[in-house]
Amino acid sequence: MSRYTTSYSIGYPRWTHAVKILIIACSVTYLVQILVGPLFTAKFGLTPWDVTNRGYIWQLATYIFLHDTGSIFHILFNMLGLWMFGSELEQVWGTRQFTRFFFVCGIGAAILMVLLFLISGGGDSRVTTIGASGAIYGILLAFGMLFPDRIIYLMIFPIPAKYLVMILGGIAFFSSLSASSGGIAHVAHLGGMICGYVYIKSRGLTRNRSQRKLSVGLRDLYSQWKRKRLRRKFDVYYNKRHGNGDASDSEKWRRWKN
Image 1 (cartoon, one colour):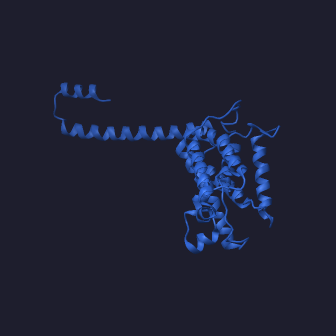
Image 2 (spheres, one colour):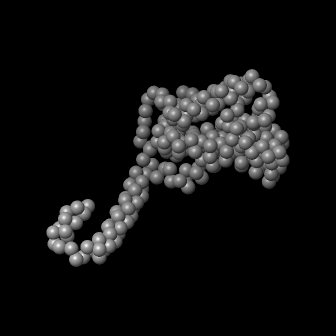
Image 3 (cartoon, rainbow, N blue to C red):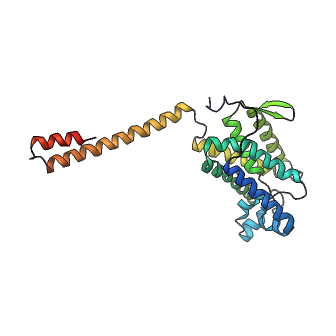
């Protein structure tokens, strides 16, 4: 059982450093989209055809910070999810690990979308995808894995985090199989969850306390062994250089030896 499963809290999560920076970046980009217009979105949104034929590699990352200017709810719900679930993950993992995870999910989802268009030719490769939903779904998955029994209120109905992740993951999966996605990039949602799951498992980010202590203990034992080995080598070297010294010198060396 994960060591993160017993945490229950009432109130609002605090603003952590990376989450704050990401929300500010998305908000500023949203304003730039409104001021500049569709050309900005076309240049920095994810268009598979542009990535594969024009070499617009930056779109794999920049699309994360763009949102639909025709509806405030797109960026609102994404930023709300980033704050509610991402802040606690950042507190557990640290800023660097959380930031890396965010971009692994977001960029990984974009790469999967481009590969899907290349392999199967599904959909129109000139359709532009925008939004942080791929990264947010990865964060939601991570929250469900670390805090599976945490109660989340969906509207007014309480539901454990693990079941909420299953429901949203199922919706993303079956919606990605549908020809009509209603303008929502469900493939990106599912891709973010897949990339997040692989990353978490490969890095052992859900290991329990005893496993973490074991790994730390083994490292400590190895470090102690190396120190003792170096100390023995130095003892041999010192004895060769000072083997003819008097007993008082030897006593002094023993007293100073740590």
